[in-house]
Length: 421
Ligand code: UD1
Image (tube, rainbow, N blue to C red):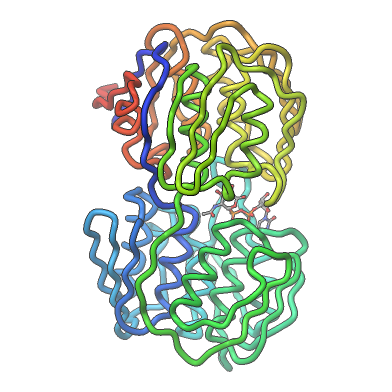
């Protein structure tokens, strides 16, 4: 077990190079299963979730090679359509393999995903959609057995909510299905578009991604290709937030304004100045951040739930009262206790969190509760007076590649040490 130790109070200055998006890499790695031959994924982040996805591919019979930020996968004959429970547990998003395995082999056996740190993680929309495409499910003893004896076929599907995972599972299942699938109320996140463009690179016929209706015309086969994964906008806004909370100036390299456009106006409202260039983004923080009256998390293009904890950490030091409303996940305020322990004034009632900005935070010993909540603690630690220790950093390692190295490169005093307790 390891922990991060942060000596706060240093404004971050310098350039940060952004890694590829976790939330693109995972569904794209599932999509590789649909391709014959060799697929090369570039700009693939070196994250524990990505390594877990590669272990699933290897278990299913693929040959995976990871070299720096390139993952090469060779799909021969799949030797299994079962993902063992231990592998399913390693990564909460492993349900994303369901549509791909089912689409490729006509069957898939997985353990039923339990709850997670963000609350219950239901998959009813995934199953309903796949059922409409000809899949049958039996669920017993925590095991989910799916078959499509006659193969999957296209369908007209309307999602009750634009779920990212359900949209991806339908896209993956529909790519090799017979006929046309029309998916209404689809999720519109940039990572959905990234999955669609990867699949198109390999020969899929998909249009409408980025809009609410996605149309997929099934094809007989996909051939592997070379594809470069989109930069991680959430890691990006985390590092911009780290600069903002410490009163620093950073240049985020490798990302344009577009994928950040639902978050940049909020940074500006908080008093930051942002200067976008085609392939980079500069942020200049004010001496003290300003409160933001209301941030409501919504499906894309609304404000992303994945950035809620990051902004909460920043606003805990802002001048005035900010209100956050979490509308996507039930249990996404678990980082609040740690921030309060560090001196933040936050009151939570149901979906609403009221943050009354304080003048300073003080270092404390805390434990990461989930990926983005852990990142929020890192931001608070960077700005706090004194020393912060963050335990349970395996949560953080799921989504940030060596966060301590990145932050040290811009002056943050962050080290990773073995946690002996
Ligand atoms: C993805 C992202 C995650 C992000 C989330 C919302 C990945 C790997 N993860 O998660 O980082 O926070 O989108 O932007 O891309 N729901 C149901 N039934 C379902 C499916 C979802 O009730 O069948 C609910 C969920 O409980 C949640 C909401 O819908 O309350 C949104 O979930 P969804 O968009 O599916 O998120 P994920 O794909 O799990």
